[in-house]
Image: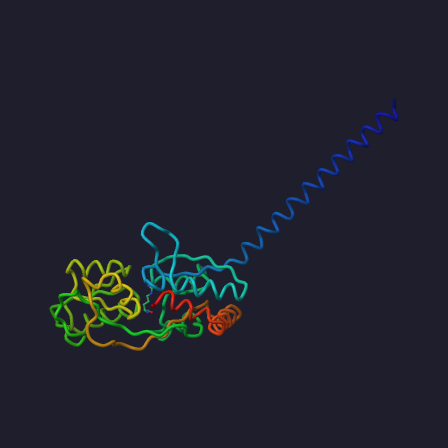
Amino acid sequence: MKKKALALILAFAMICAFSLSACGGGSESESAEEGSEETAKLKVVTEATFAPFEFTEDGEEEIVGFDPDMMAAIAEDQGLELEWVNMEFDSLIPALQSDQGDIICAGMNKLAGDRAEKVDFGDTYFESDLMLLVTADSDLAGIDAVTSDMKLASQIGTTGGDMVQAMKDEGKIADGVVLNQWTDCYLQLQNGEVQGVIVDKPVGEAYLNNHSDIAKFVGDSFGDHEEFAFAVQQGNTELLDKLNTGLANIKANGTYDELVDKWFS
Ligand code: ARG
């Protein structure tokens, strides 16, 4: 009797020990997976009303365009994982400074103002200039023909936004309307609230592709020449080196040119 009871207790103890170690092993590998996911994803911040660089289709949340495609190709080349966050343009640099994001990619001109003192920019991936967009029936000849009774719009915190603000301060226009979204700038123009929108040339061109019946460019490009670059937090040279290397690689292997064809032809 005693022997039988002892054998039973032993068998029970062995089953317990086995199932415990099995459970323990399982939970350990799960938490290891979770940990590596958290550390690998880099947060790319942008403002997504800037087609064809970054925008959302009607009713969709996904951010699409040249910048997401280019960054996806760079990330694949460098073994990085990205997630995109949409916010207002003038929040992008503060977001990096306050650790709310790792990378800015937003058709941002690295030469403008004091931006380069606040974040570290990578190599230039696109060059641009500003243009004046007006309604199709406008007889305005160009930016120099704008008169002090007119209103112009552009996006807040951008090179165009700074320009309409400066023109207002100098009394060259009646009002400078700086808005959060490019889509609202176009609406103001369509509704006759403003006589023109100052916008980056490739972005105005994309708008005109679908709206040539209601809008047009006038005059030559103006303002300072722009160089678009992605940016990282100041001092994050490890990440910046990877992004620059990835950009060079996708330029060398033809991916970059394919994306230019896809979004700008
Ligand atoms: N190129 C202009 C600038 O750097 C406008 C950029 C706007 N970009 C955007 N994603 N909304 O100021």
